[in-house]
Every structure is written in structure tokens, then in C-alpha cells.
Length: 456
Image (cartoon, rainbow, N blue to C red; front, top):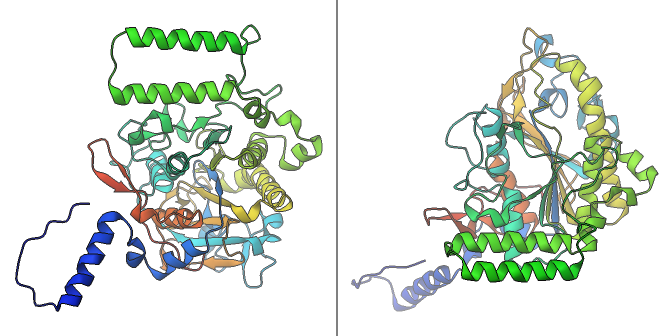
């Protein structure tokens, strides 16, 4: 930060002028940011306890009014087919579809007033995970190297900036990437403007499949460590004598190669991804389905040191219930999601990891209050709910409120950026005062949201 001053006659006393100059000097050095922080953010940073994040992301967007923010007094065309049930926290009710989570409400906080204004799946997922709007509201978009990075990418970047040395990648997505379809992937989830070296490790495989194995994590049987070292040395010689590549591109290539070599030469990494090491009873508890085994893998990765793991409850936009919303939620979608979610919370708690692991449940947006002609609900980013637990989150509460139909926030409106600011604060980062650079060289704060009061 450069401060330009011109010599003028000041009306301030000498002591005041010195005070101003000290403050400006501190800002230039980045040492006085606490003076600019809100009391909420300062308190959150002071009590930061989280070390890692697991984000459960429901691609396609679940109906908030059928799960977390029910409207039993609304007309039938709004309230739908499900009834609210009491939780283990007096005064808080959630859907009858979530009886097990209802008994764990004391560990969770519901935010019922999240909103943005992009109704396309990929742009909606971008706003939810990046905390900023994409340049157009569309589903038919794909990632690029100028993208603003999502908070998973940024958590991985911050971890590596701070000397990350675990044997597993800092940011992992399982089982498949955020996408509308495999033709249109969500921008922001990869390294973007930070470079490919900060791409997540995307599983691209179903951990519930028979004989599941992550390709590329072990050396081929015909390749021992000595042969690998010789080939790596030969490659380095060829590159030194070959055509010069732009420095920034070469740095990305070197980083990616080092990452790949680190993974295949580490037995620890392949062991973490090997779910057959888990007792059958544990695997059954999570559910022998893609979501359950992805949640189990997330726990194993966090234990091994990963900082951010996303479990994409897809693939593709499986929660996009334009038709037959109620039967789909009751019979296909909610049961495996709840089973995996409950198992994860319980497992983290039993292992002493819940207090240091922030678990987020979210989606692209919400769904329309009014049921359509196909017994479905359509896209609705104007108001929706998300849930947080662990990692220093105060459980047993509801933050914000929607109006009587669940259409718009009526109390304490919250943006995705505010959610991100809260997550970063839980991890001990004052995200508004940490910057990275866009492809054109402009500095950008890690997050420009406000920490949500009452959550931490």
C-alpha cells in the first residue's frame, strides 16, 4: 500500500498529527487491521477454534421450506406435504424428514436468511461457493484461469502460504466436481487466477463403487522408487536444455509435478483414500452409497490434515426438483443425505474432531415458495437456508428469518460473502485484510463479507 501525502499547513496539534501518521504507517505495513475490524469480527478471531472445513454441498438446490424453514401456517400451495417436528432445542422446529438431525440440533445453527440473485445452477453455485456473483447469470458456463477462487481454493492457498506439509492435498472435492452436467462445470472451484497449482484434488470416482480405488496415488508395479527418481532427473535435464517456458507457467508445472510426485511416493496418501481400512460397521453407519462414503472419506482426509473437503451430493444437479419434489425428497434425496450427515457429526464428535472441524451444509439457492403444476418447486435465490456446526459454531440457534412464505429475508439478511467471512474467522483469518491478485494484477480481498454475529 502506497500513501501519497503533500506538504500542507495542518490544523491538527503535533501529537494528533503523529498519531495519524502512526496509524497510516501501520496500515501500510498491514499491522493495524484490527483497528478497522468490527467488534464481531475481532471477537470471532480471538476465539477461533476451527482447523479445517467440511462442506456438504447439495448440487441442484434443496427446498428450504421443506427442510429447515417450514411454513405450516401458509396455504397448502406453499406449505407442501411435510410437517415440522420439534428438535432437542425448545422452540426450534425442522422437517419431519430429518428426525435424526432434529435430535442433534443443539450442535447446529440454521441461517434462514441467506440470499443472492443468480438463478442459474452454475452461477448460483458460483455465488454460494465464491461469495461473489459471476459475470453472467447462467448455467451454460465453465471454469477459466481468470476465475475468482472459491473459499475451498482460498483455504488451500492460505494453508500452503502458511507452510502446509500434510501428505494429503489441502483441498479435496469428492466424489465429483460442482456442475450442472459434466459438460458445464461450475467456475471458481479450481485454482482460477491463483494458478493451477491451487486446483483441488477432485476424486472423479464413486467411493461407494465396488473395488473403489483412486487412480494415480500409487506407483505402477513395474516402477520402483529408484526408477522414478532416475526418470525425474532425466526430465529435469531435458527441460533445462529445451525451449524456455514462461516463468509463471513453469512455476505451475513444477508445482503440479511436485504435488503428483508427493502423492504417489507417499504411502500415507493412498492409505487415507483406502476406505477398505474402515470397519464394515462404520461404512454401514455412513451408508453404502456415494454420499455416505464421500462423507466418510472427508472425515479421513480431515484426520490426515486436509484443510477443506467438499462432498458434492450429486453428481450434477440431483436436487433440482422441478417435478415431484415431495416424493423425490422423501424417497430418494433426504434419507441418504441425513444418514451421512448424522454419521459424520457423530463420528467427528466421538473422535474429538468436531470442535476443530467446521461442517457446512448448503446448496446453490432455495426453491420457490409456491408449488408448480408438476408438484415441484423451481429456482429461488432470493431467500434460502444453510446450516453450520462444529468448529466453534454456537449450536442450538436460528440466525435470521424469512417472511411468512419463505420468499424473502425478514430479519438479519445474510449474503454468501457473510457466510464465507464467518468461516474464515472461525479458521482464524481476517479475510477482509488478506489479499491475492487477479490476473490483471489487481489486489482482491479473500472475502468482502461481514462475520455473522452470534454464530461464533
